Image (cartoon, rainbow, N blue to C red; front, side, top):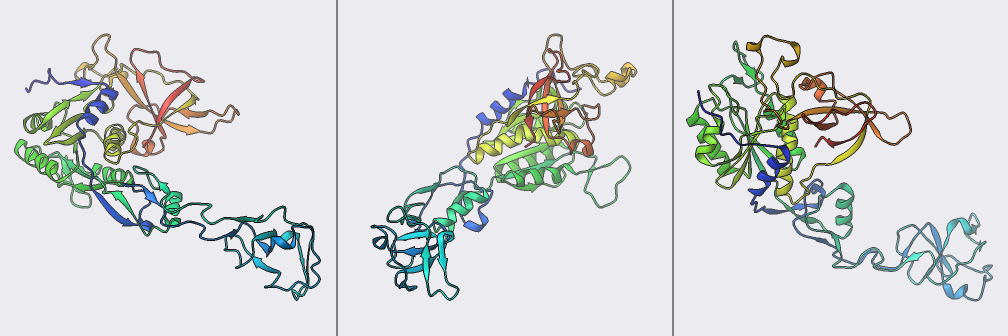
Length: 425
């Protein structure tokens, strides 16, 4: 039996710190049409290419007039003609040539045939109701700073400065390597004892939503030579590698040994469960994020460990978003924290994995929580614990909004308590 006694175990925060410490990214840049830039991150400041507005502009639907006609009080308008003493001026449009002041249309009385005009309010000053050229921006103004995620509003702002293209960071290429003799692709025959590989679909969707490009490798059998070859190829061809499964204590779990051979393992496991066998490594300068488990666990371990690495590549904040919430029910301890499946049910000793927590060691149970309406007017979000399990089904996990890491050394929070939770990425 292989010796796992020297495996490095760290808590979640230290795992993220170690991963980020080896992220020596040198992001590539590219120029994209402004209409395709939403969701990308600026690699250079986006600046205005002109003054806007580019002339005196009307602020509201109005009638344009000459201030000289009003500077001594309300004029006699009985002989006024359109195009000479007055003209229509609409919101956001350049003032008619030669006119300098605007009166809001609601204060104007016009004959149906436009033959006569009068006003029930006079402008207060020259240029009233208008904006000068360059009021919104001047050529050279920074509209969107470097390292900014382009939202729909910011894309609109960039375009308003007459930018047809913007310079952005190229998307990080993330390789996803599923490993395991038991895996087969969906849609074909599923021999006895085999499982359908679906984590790559989940990973690809998350990676693309976070601004990356996912390249899924073929399923790699539990063969040390093939695993080593796949990891080295992926590290050479990608910015980040995600290695799925093969990190536990099974007879065919070779991933950790292979990572030790071809790179540097930063940590072999973490102090939380599910997701205990999350790992981190670096191979030829490429960070390797190790994840394990079924989709329900893979989903949040990717949030925990892959998301901050991708954000570092894109120059974004790597810290998770945490918010205070109020519990509708307590997060009771269920069985022995860190114990295996069946620990809480009184199953025979041989059917239960021994506790992985030494006396006095802090271990964290990952609780997935769902927001529900507050109903009490206190402004705090309220949560419900998922259906009594630390391993919710995919269907249940899909409805979860946040995570809470419950320490084995602290009493669990109870109904009515305010706790800080981490939003799903």
